[in-house]
Image 1 (cartoon, rainbow, N blue to C red):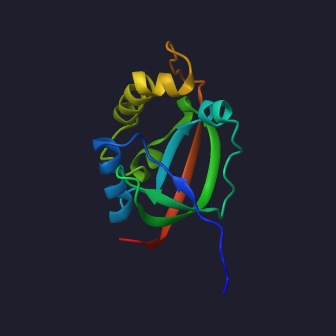
Image 2 (image 1 turned 180 degrees about the vertical axis):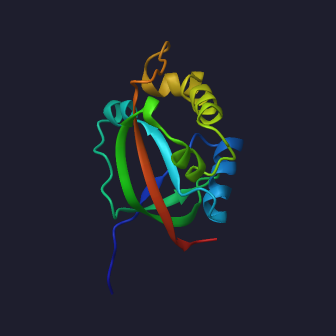
Image 3 (image 1 turned 120 degrees about the vertical axis):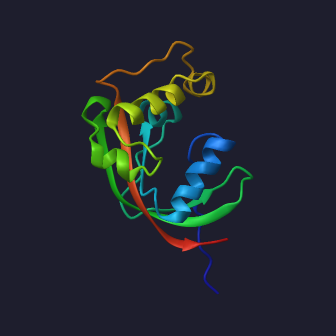
Length: 141
């Protein structure tokens, strides 16, 4: 019998209503991309995930709900995010400005600043983000 390594968790936002909405958007096929701060990887001393990596999408209850596979990983300045990226994030934003306002509110939240270890953290056009494009390869629920 073959034993396989457990999948790394694929976490969107923090547990709660936002994560619930994002997970639902992934499961519906609306969300095929996500963005995080490069600084998160640096703080956690984590390598960027490689294309082809499969992870377990985790809901707010800690349950694995799907297996996702990364199809593209890019590092880019926040100021260069375009409309295609915004639409592929599947969060209902119809403009880059609207998407950015929502993401800045999240990145400037007390919870995120605490996770980064910087109570005054802010983003600007030069802040580097990690854009991850993915596809659902298996639904677990």
